[in-house]
Amino acid sequence: MKRHSGWFWLLIGAGLLFGLIVVASVLGLLALHSFDSGGSFASIGGGNVGVIDIDGVIMSADSTVDQLRKFNDDDSIKAIVMHIDSPGGAAAPSQEIYNEVIRIRKEHKKPIVASIESVGASGAYYIASGANRIYANDASIVGSIGVIMEWTNYGDLLKWAKLQPEVIKGGRLKDAGSADRPMTPEERAYFQGLVDNMHAQFIRDVAAGRGIKPDQLKPLATGQVWTGEEALPLHLIDQAGGFRVALLDTAHRAGISGEPNVIKPARHHKTILDMLTTDTDSLFSAPEQLLEKHAGFYFLWR
Image 1 (tube, rainbow, N blue to C red):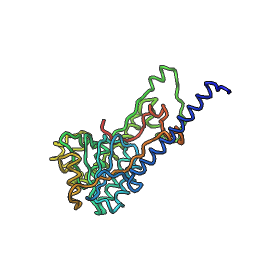
Image 2 (tube, rainbow, N blue to C red):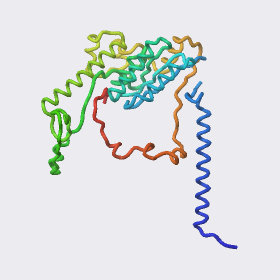
Image 3 (cartoon, one colour):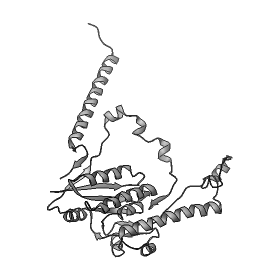
Image 4 (cartoon, rainbow, N blue to C red):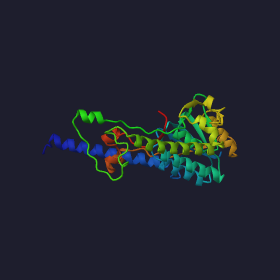
């Protein structure tokens, strides 16, 4: 009888292990699908209240806006709660989410409220201000109505390394904000004008969302933050209380009696099968992307 080498048994073992991984991944996907309510939402619990988590730095509006629209179009969902724990983020995505919140609010189909957890500042507060009501804990951080633009100038480092940037441009402000040299007075005035314009938009939209005059809000629009306890008499929030208070109060206002059924967008969890069938670039950020500091205008509290 022919004896097989160690490599033969090693390949057999590896094949069996791979087969077990594939089977486990498929079973995991089936389990996740079965937990996904109607293929769109995962249910936790009378009447349905849709809950959207907005956390971390806001760099994109697509997912949140899509979730808001799905909840608004679903007649089984009687109210929407945005559960916010974010310092804000990029200006345009924050504004885009705010506009969608305002659209839902103006339709009067269902109440939409914001519940601020630890932080609801800058762009996150911008979003919250579009809701019918804002709830926050006494110790929550609220506000930071301001705009920031920043970058690091490494011109002296290039000089030390004896590197000389060369730029060919059409338009004298085309390379304004270049990080390899100091800004000119004209460039500084140019960027300050853009920041001031965005700040005015921020004030105008928050004032509209909160139902107050822009001139009343301007003294508060210094970029500073307040605790929830301080924000209440300033009319930056409507009620003190955490997520549970916001959920039950909103459910009651929507005509739901008893414990509301919380509906959240189902989150797809990456499995080993995904890694085997998906381009790895879409699963893991490139190292240079992790180190990159995005230039731009931000509604962000640091």
